[in-house]
Length: 79
Image (cartoon, rainbow, N blue to C red; front, side, top):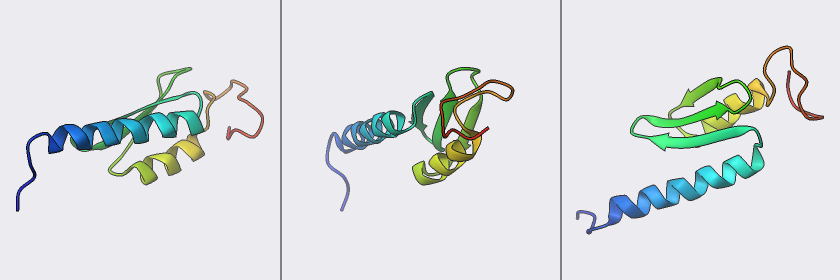
């Protein structure tokens, strides 16, 4: 069985929604999806993290924190 017309568009829309939800839960990061997985870009310094899954990207983001090295981030953010 093959996917019907518009299936790719629905998948892109679903991934867009997941990206917006992840951004809301991780302020200071712009999150997008692409052919090879997911990318998160820290907005304060354009530092990028990439992973093949959203869960993997979120793990990397949690370690990278929301502030560039040497800059103070919000309380509770990783250095």
